[in-house]
Length: 193
Image (cartoon, rainbow, N blue to C red; front, side):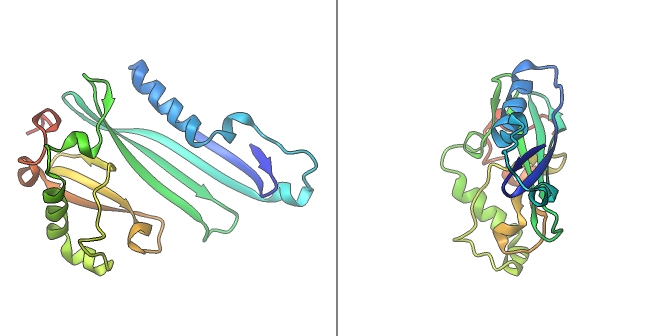
């Protein structure tokens, strides 16, 4: 628990043991960088009893999503809640790794050169009705590093707040592997096909 003038925050931080030191270090460092106060156990002196009653909760959880040959996907769920149920934040980030190269795969790593615009247009075309519902136009729509592999395709994930949707949720937009195969570098195409 950490306390300051805005109240006290309780932390629930969970990571996993992958059996790979470099991956375990990545997630431990990521949690420490994101939630440094959880490790400082800061309590400011002279806080009133009223301030100490104000409780906030912050949670982070790392989970394994799946592995496809040398590619592995994990999720990092973050949640922040205040005493007011209607204020808070939820975010789920997916991180993908090349287990041979021991590196995180970004959207730039994933795609062949000069394919960003094609992927963006494909995403928009296949999900146009839904995106228009959120009043999102193709000029504002951007690619994200927040993606994961699944059996049928690649799923790109965005916070609902990016689309002016007032809910604590993540929006997912899937593209079938057959549709993106020409855009993805062969080394980052999953070996499940």
